[in-house]
Length: 317
Image 1 (cartoon, rainbow, N blue to C red):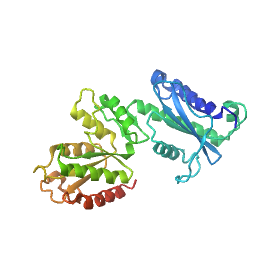
Image 2 (image 1 turned 90 degrees about the horizontal axis):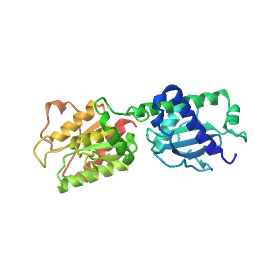
Image 3 (image 1 turned 60 degrees about the horizontal axis):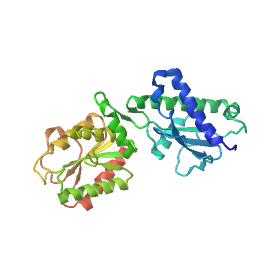
Image 4 (image 1 turned 180 degrees about the horizontal axis):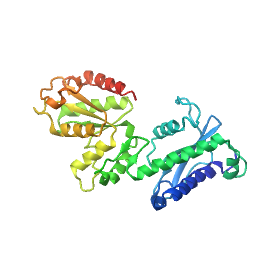
């Protein structure tokens, strides 16, 4: 393999993206992802393909290794990349490397002419050429919708009326990059309450053990003006799943904040578990028909894991 093979192809991919954008969205070109500068990571897949992980960055020089690493194929249930499964491969790699919507993955056949990219391409079959075109179109489409506030590779989107939170959502994803693993915890906040602190700790431990990223709205403030409701909205928008805790032993009420947040998540059609203390008394008519999973807040360690794992299994992720 020629000395600059990985760099040649990394730049060729970016140049192709730039040309496609110039032809179709010329007014968008100035702030299109990856075009200004990027980092790349090449991986060899079964000696037949090379995977390129392309990461957008705001400034700096292009960076990437001249020698590709070997891709670990053991955890992949997909067959080798093809026209039929290339979108599945792209989704799989985005998840595996926790890529953002402004990043990209590209798979090319390893064909080295010994000259340059143009000569390499002349040796490709028609199937490989079609595979290239499909990936290029997928990436440009992904980036187009990203600029509109929608991540079509992870189901994340900003609904009408919330586009003003785009910058805060971008910052949120820097801390919590995998939308598909983010779970928003809706619970009562009482600083210093030992029972609620224990509940939070045990709940997070179970979710982390199942490969998820549990998050609460008081973990970090993303709003520059410190607006509490908008900060909660950032969390709810940027988490694919939610868990609403129903308990009334601390205060004898159906916590209004939990009710509001649960309604917001369900209005966005996000899968949300209603996790109810077995002693919860303040049921409301609008949730009586909702299937709940129970735990015992007086025996959290022995009762919290089973209902959460049951719910996760039902999600069929």
